Image (cartoon, rainbow, N blue to C red; front, top):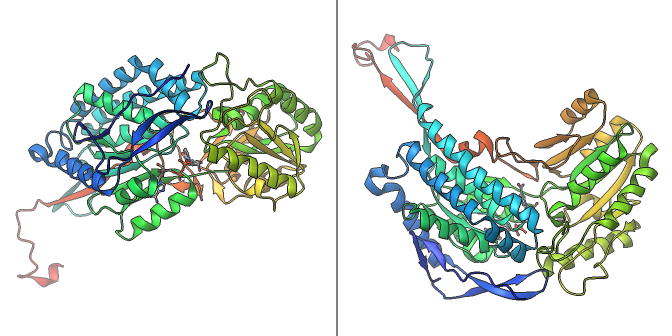
Length: 503
Ligand code: NAD
């Protein structure tokens, strides 16, 4: 049965709006390769209108309607959005499964996280008022000084396809909580649920222009947002290559950017582990979400004394992972997002082979699936540090393995990467876990697990994985600007003119 996605337009100024050039981009279901609908393709003309709408939303009623409204006003809308997302969860989860190939169960968890994220930032919006006008202690009693946190203004939010609605929400919820007005540009490969978010915003009566959603290609709809002089900040999640382009374009206008980029994260497994538990975290850490996770722990750094027994388990269990249409019950691995991504992953695997690595399992399309962009869970050994598979992000279900003999060597291998997003350390020796967690250069370190992510905790990376942190209070700070207000409170004249010696 062919399932189609709702036909939507751009969402600008609280209304559906046809793109200026009337172009559309097909939506392809990655498990059937069928076209199941299309999304509007915005260009710079549409971005211009969206930015105008956002600016008007901020200045309406002198900002009292949104930017400088009490936090409780904004919180009310965020909570209403959360409620509607929960009501629509079954549909939204299904749409993500069709749009990007995510197993239905995982897509449903994501929708819970989306609703939870809106709720969380509703609380933070309310708490923001009490934190305003925080006094600053000064060395002179003739002055008083305090700090206000104000919304940065109009923000451009550019998101990827691997968690389509969740990655967008990590930006939209704190931006709105802070009092910004936003233009969201989701990935052209998976925009369907972001357009459903637009419908939710319309339904809850979010003030016009506060959130605008323009779908389209990166260079046509994303780039004009970055270079628009009336967009005050860009928050970007995507590949390091695009992040670098975004940063250099924003630099021309000295525009602030926060960047959540790619990774090649290590998982270090010591000799004292429970093999079964460690094997499950290793597989989950790399193959969850079809391996398309920015923080995927895709470099296994394994103590040599347990290598044979551990790899035996990984191979046996990998072969038992259910690979199917994401809507099928029990699916654990669906297709990767697109034909382009499928080809790219197979090329990574063939290059690893030609460079001398061994494909321990997987490495191809599963035999039982004739259509769709499916890739078997793949484990690669005999890897050396000069190989592409060790150095570059694959963004698919591919794990590469290197062994070590000492803690120093494990740390050195873990840090042998231009990226620094996540890392996992598995050992029963918690002191050792603590030591290693300090020594690894990454924004997130998991101990005795891999990948759990909480709305309350900071998320982001170092080195080529970007800078800035999303989620938690750090996520809200991304959209706030700190203003110093200093007042002269003495009754005496300042005295510069009359008695220069006072200065
Ligand atoms: P991508 O870089 O191809 O695209 C990301 C977004 O940028 C898309 O919306 C795209 O349309 C837009 N874009 C493309 N060119 C642009 C330009 N010139 N100007 C402005 N916008 C432009 O990334 P992707 O393939 O969608 O996502 C996968 C990547 O995202 C992986 O590298 C992954 O590691 C990374 N990612 C990182 C995190 C994190 O939290 N660090 C989370 C999810 C994904």
